[in-house]
Length: 248
Ligand SMILES: [Zn+2]
Image (cartoon, rainbow, N blue to C red; front, side):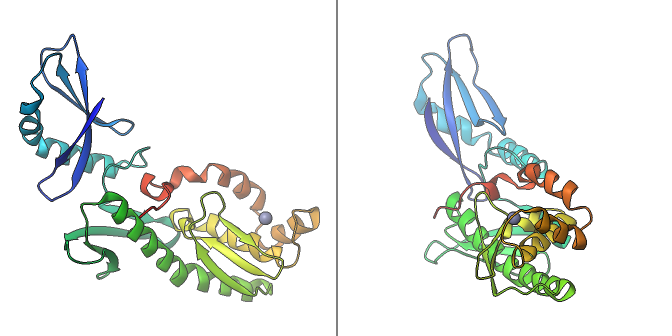
C-alpha cells in the first residue's frame, strides 16, 4: 500500500494509505483508530487525481479525528492531542498548536487548563515529544511535593526523587533511597498514585517484596492488594500518544 499525506485546514498533516480494490468502482474513505485513514480506489484509477479528491474530504477527516480524540485511548495516534485529562490531579488540559517554523518547538502552560505548543507543529512526533517534556515538568511540580507530604505522614525518609518517563514501571527505589516516579502516573486515579508513592517509600525500609515489606505497605494503604492487582491493567488509562516512546 502506498502512503501519502493530507494537510488539514489547521496545518495538521495526516498520513493516509492508498489501497486498491478490484471490486470497487468508487473512491472510499475509512478512518479507524486501528488503521488510521485509508483511501480505497478502483483498480486502474489515475493516481494524479487523488490528492485533489482527498483534499476535498479535509473537513470530514478533521471532524472524525476530533471524535477519536474524545473517545481515546486509541491504538494509533495520528494527530497530537487537543485535550487530555490528568486524573491524579483532577485536571483537564486543552492543547493549542501555533505554527512558527523558524522557532524551536516547545510546550508551555498558557493559563489555567491551557497549553500552547509553538514551533514546528506539523511534525506529530515533535509535538508528542514536547508534550512528554511538559508532563515531566508537571510531574516534578506535583508528584515530588506529594511524595514529600507522604514521607512526612509515614515517617519514611527518602534520599531524593527523579521524575522520568519509563516504559514499563510506575516507580522504583534504589538501595540509597533514591525514588524514581513515572510522570505517566498523572493519568491514573488519585488513590492508585498514592499507593505507588507509598509502595516506593516502603522500599526505603525494605528493599524487597517480602511479607515484612507488604505488612508495612498495608499499614499505610489498607487497599494495597487490590490496587496492586488493578495496576497491572493501568496502561489502558494512558492515551496512545503517552504510551508511545517520545522520539524527537
Ligand atoms: Zn516494589
